[in-house]
Image (cartoon, rainbow, N blue to C red; front, side, top):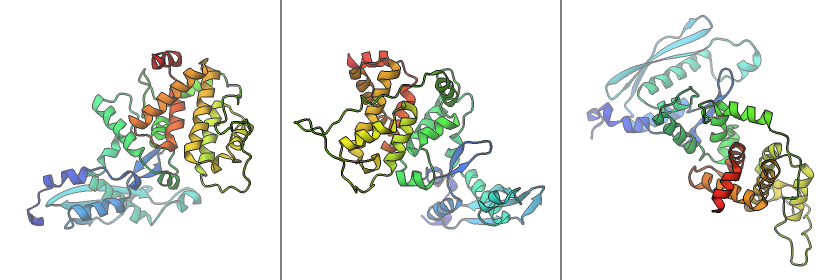
Length: 335
């Protein structure tokens, strides 16, 4: 088909398609929180692939108060739509100014282009990132799909963008609601304030590599720190479970290491699962077998049904388990 014969309706599916998770970035929102967005360069490249013969025209930048404003006319397949872009002309302090790229006019032009593209449906799916009081069933489903989709981001992508993980970000921004329809983060804060601080316990961190004669492997000096992300994971979990640093060191030494960053991923899972199940025993009154069952089932559900990456899964499991009726869950899981 010749490009001159292509109609806009023939392009809608490609224009509205979601960008790969790794092409999203994070930006801060006014008043707190963060938002996933796609850089305008990625949108431009997508448009080049879909319809190379697109046309664009910008008005001269105009300063209105503290804002520089630009109007963009974007034409795709014979259809023209308009986007208005704006940017601060200047910032109150030098630190904010240093974080900006390009001149105010260049930033306003990029903003206008993105908004014009949104008029054609590109990146419009990002608008689902909202904590409005009432979502329709369709909106809730789309938001859940988006969170699950963004959960596929690799640890390196997340680290480069200071991304806490899609589920955690949704939780903190209040996109997820509790049973009463309130932002889950508010319920979480109330729960954290009301729950007693668990007493540190290390007995639940059982050694797995104990030899037949009862001897423990000695820590190997000079092991490389091949898994630096494990230190952060353990620290995040420990901040809630209350385990003392020495208990973590003791566990690592039983596995021939000195710290979590020296322990492979398949082994660190045992530590994290043990920390959570031990915490359940202390705070929820579960028997050891019940606690292990609850944690195992929760991790399996998050992996198989939610597609959560291993980098997020333990924090998410712990967040959710704090608000469950665990005795009932453990009993039903064992039946």
